[in-house]
Length: 342
Ligand SMILES: [Zn+2]
Image 1 (tube, rainbow, N blue to C red):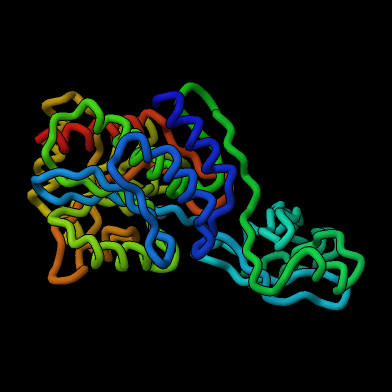
Image 2 (tube, rainbow, N blue to C red):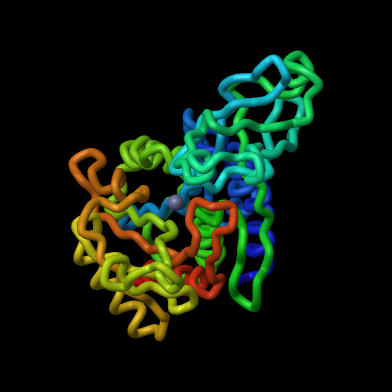
């Protein structure tokens, strides 16, 4: 991956962008992508659209800027904070996690508390947790002290700064879907040298984790001929995953081309033939229903849009320790660049 794009990826991973609060990430996206396109603008709900004008097919690429997170919902008399979850979160993973709350005066660090194992009775120990069983401790003296730093409605993310595990594997929170944004930025960089007359839109969408809401808004607005989402998918190359049930997807074996009713057969055929003729590694995944990505809303916008999806394999999705391979992101950039060249 190009050094500048990698730096932008790292910067985005250290930002907090729970659904509905994507501004930091979309302004970074704007800064990085602006030199490669004719125009960048943001719509009323925060979707960020980069446009490289052309006279040919109108094609839209989309990755989402938001990540899962928490929202402060109640502050008790002792200054402990209660929260609601934004997006799909495994509540049992939350105890002991450190959080960054986007307070009015800046970031506030806290920890999600739970009674220690020594003091739990058996039923507490094996319980499926609900958010209201937990709290965030920001070391406030009392309610008023907590309220001076955090308001009801403030949002938070789990801490999980990026760490490179080896030459290619990256560990971080929110690689879903900041790795997709890095693919968009890499693709934009390649536009300078690509010979194409296509009318190209590169979109950082909002609120994907709440049901691809941004994708719906922006696809209706742009009305592309073709829409391609870039997101993560589950790698299945670790214990407890079953190829028979979960498919056979590995980190480092290339970008994933999903098959199924959400994706246009013609686009998939083109992507596969591009991958083959250019020697780009790729993997195939079967998804027999609408995907849990922006592609779901892209396809059904207006009277229907020809839709594609490229996925980056990811271990431990929606935890603060997601793992992806930068080589797979490079495969996705190469594949989409080759596709634009057609
Ligand atoms: Zn995602």
